[in-house]
Every structure is written in structure tokens, then in C-alpha cells.
Image (cartoon, helix red, strand yellow):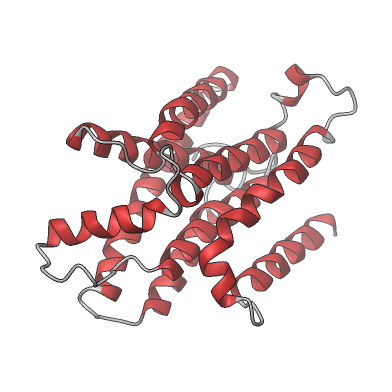
Length: 255
């Protein structure tokens, strides 16, 4: 009964987010602020999980870890999409469109393959939805949490490799270095210390996160550059991929 109520709450929450009544324009520009403002409430929820209130006890609580993973990504979204290291607003939008167009050899810089609607759906599905599912399913099923950690790691590595390739800052690079990579390494080591059986789930999580980035980029180009299908089809694919982790390792152990 409790799980069905939680699932119902998640469905209602994301229905309200993705089916906004009269708030579309606001959400496209300011969605990342909603996440930032939610952080204090997420922290209250995280630290209310343990009656003892001891930090060491919290970090043995997988639901607490899931909430902290989501908070970590929201902090990354602040740098990536709200205000970057140099004080630029929504720098990721222009930076990545320039990167995409440069690699495609496009002469018309007014074309924006990466729309703000795409950024909104990517971040609310592959991050917020995955994070919400990880919180909901922990500790009975850990693979959604492992998937959340994996998307953190893969995204962080992408930012770092992009920075090294051009020896240039990109929006989200700082938090990738100081939060994403250390957090994932700690989590993977913690899981392996509990049981080596988690190795298969860790590998599967990284594969899922890598494919999430493939779908993210390939789907975007097919929808908004090659015009093979409408953008909303791409959005549905992102949401479907976000809920895929629920279907694997349901017994909490590696297959």
C-alpha cells in the first residue's frame, strides 16, 4: 500500500511538471531554479530518515544516499544551466549549440538543435525522474540508485573529457570534478565493500548511463537536425529510458 502511494505521488509530480497549465514558457527558462529551491526540502527529508541523526548512520541508508545523489546533480544543474563559473546565465544552451553546429559544419548559427524544451525534458527525466525512482525503490531494489550514480559518473566524465579536448571550461565542469567523480567512486567502493555481487549491477549501470547519453545526443540530432521524427517522440524515448532501471535486478542482487 505504501509503495503504491509513493508511485502515485511520483506520477502526479511528473504529470504536473510535464503537463504545465499556462507555465510552459516559465518552465523552459527557469526549471533549474525549481530544483535549486527544492534542495533544502530534500535535505530535511534526507536527515529525517534516521532517528539517531548521526551522519555515519545516514551514509549506510540507501534512501539517504539516493536523495544526496539527486541533490548533487541539482547542484551540477545550477552551474550547468543557471549560473556558471563565470557568472553566465544558461550558458550550457549556447555553449552546446555552438559545439554541435561546429561539429556538423553548419554555416547558419541561428539554428538551435538543442532546444530549451529538450534541455528541460533531458534533465527532468534522466536526472529528476531517475533520482525520484532511486529514492522510491531504495533499499529494496538498488539498481535505480546505481543507475542514478552512473549517470552522474558518465556525465561528469563527458564534461571532463570535453574540457581536456579543448583545454577550455564548459558549464558544469567544476562540479563534475569536485562532486561527480568523487561521489561515484565513493559509492562504487561502498557497494563493493558490501558485496562483490554488486559488480554486475555497477557495470550494467554504466552501460545504461552510456546508452542514455547516446540516446540523448543521437535522438536530438535525428529529431531537430535531420527531422526524422517530431521532438515529442524524442522526449518519450527519454522518459522510457529513464524508467528502464526499474525492470532490472528487481530482487536486489546481481543476475
